[in-house]
Amino acid sequence: MEGRRTEARGELVRPYAVTRGRTEPQQDITLEAVLSASATAVAESRFAGHDKHRIATICEGRAQSLAEIAAYTRMPLGVTRVLVADMVAEGLLTLHTAAAPTMGFVERMNLLGRVLSGLREL
Image (tube, rainbow, N blue to C red; front, side, top):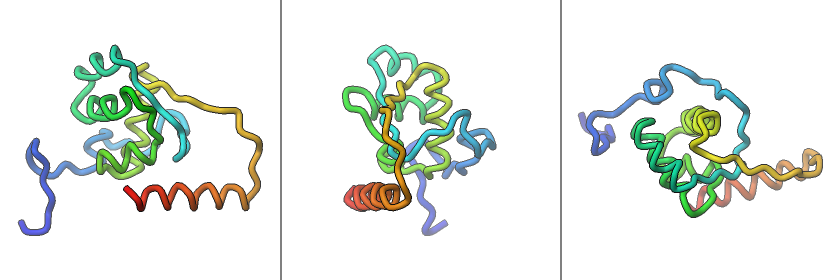
């Protein structure tokens, strides 16, 4: 079929198949959340599946935001969020959080604008 993108591993995989039909993550991870993976976690992720191993490899050596991971893997954000939450629960990724002051509406909108701008640059 023309217009359908296929990956090196074969036919197009529907997003819900990657997450086994789940649409909600085990824990809420924000778009700007920063994640990293150790070399040990990358080695262990080989047994967790292709997508999880790819995410761990992206996060090894350089912490990445959830938005960056979704962009680099070219997976929908919802799918990436479910996989990343699974990986945090499994110990394959480390979630780095900073105690941020409570933001108002204007500050959140500015942050979202910066994230959107960064995604467009990718």
